[in-house]
View (cartoon, rainbow, N blue to C red):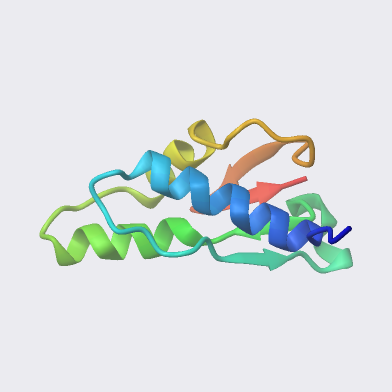
Length: 96
């Protein structure tokens, strides 16, 4: 049996959330970063895709707030059993 790493699973979950949240765009694969142990108050991983989405909209002549984009991503996270919680720090989604 082949199992995905937590990183790969989170990347899949957030890529689905991006595609669901922004059906009017060809959305990129979600960008995630592990959080250093000394920065654990910011989660285990961060999703930094909201800036990429904001840039895509800007290229289309639309200004979208990265924080609102981050919230829309969170609102579209599919049901899963690995994410305990999320919150937004500036435009980055913190994931536990």
